[in-house]
Image (tube, rainbow, N blue to C red; front, side):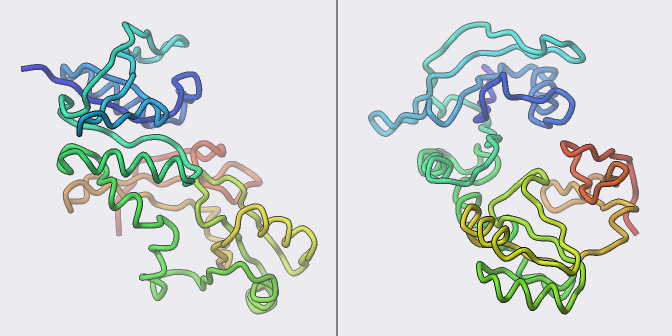
Length: 243
């Protein structure tokens, strides 16, 4: 029986070998005997009720500067994949959304994560269901609301709702430049605004859950002088336990 995993991601040249978990997933799948078909959203086609991609069969290498080799270009029916991984980076734009419509044609058990859920669940906005467990948080595009929030909390963090990887995050203390904030809101649209927690210097915890079971956790520490614990922003990960 053929074992294929299709990975929908960015251009291979954009992969950061130090921080991108997609590479680690591909290496693990390869070790388990799976052939990797790599493709981008631009390669998706719906033809005669089949989802066809123009992808690449790729072999990956661990701990090497040249970490991949393209074996050959292929025209591949995603129905023939054992699993399809959605791994491309945001922005969560029209192209991203359209790719989920293509993947909705496939057996949902094959696609990780479910494309309907990826489309319908905003990673940051979904957290609004758990506000009582969080630092004080608002979602807005209104400068005056941000001004009131800063006055009340003294130190705040602003994040684009559709942002990722610790990018474009603002840390504000007391003073607010109206012109800069309005430019930011115009560029990123609605934002998530949170009270700053100084204990971030001790790190945050990221929990890995598979099929409802906790399988592990890491503690991510920001680099010196930063409030960002994201690995791709210089944070360092350590194995940890949950309390």
